[in-house]
Length: 112
Image 1: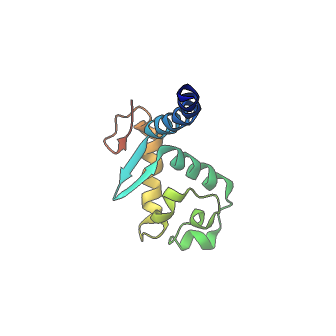
Image 2: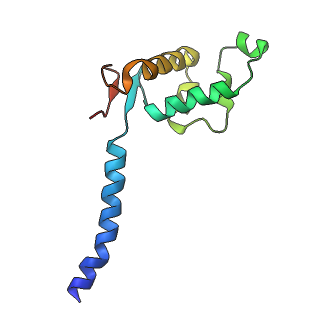
């Protein structure tokens, strides 16, 4: 009976370990007090590419139009509250595109 209990726990333990391993493999970008996942910044670029620019929205830089998109990742939403959101998003995209996946940028963490 003890063997059954142990074998019943193994799938649950394995699942927890897989989830922990997956979360530790995420690459994060830390910039101006914000910490966001590299994958979120990539999604930001995709969302911005889907939007049709409006001249009226371009004049109003606060908040950027992508902040109103329902698919904006949760870890990017606090950036929208910043008065410098447009500049922060621009810098995050720049870091992600340049060298974050290679982890040569000091703003990137969680690399192997």
